[in-house]
Image 1 (cartoon, rainbow, N blue to C red):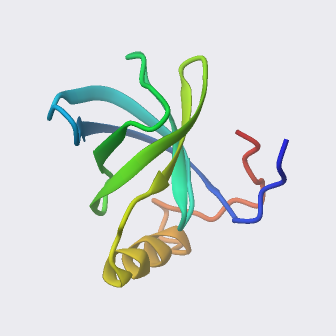
Image 2: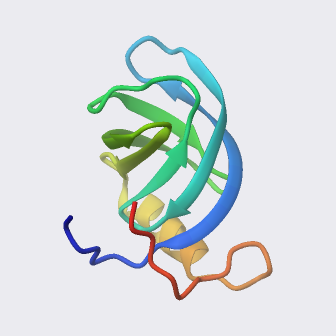
Length: 109
């Protein structure tokens, strides 16, 4: 397994996302970790590696591409996001306001 090089924050967000291919809305997504590069999540619906979605995070809606799958857990990367969106993600990632606290543990998903 490849070693992680990006710090990840453990979270517990329930969100929705929409397919960029057929605009199907998927509810009940549980975001597990996120970083400035992407996120991991659980989803009961079977998704395919390579599928793209707009995911509604608590602070922004951003495009993602599924890059790995293990049972109902998925890893994804952010797609074509602007420098403003990257700055917003980094700001939220490193903010310590009781809602988003940077964890020392790095996810191994």
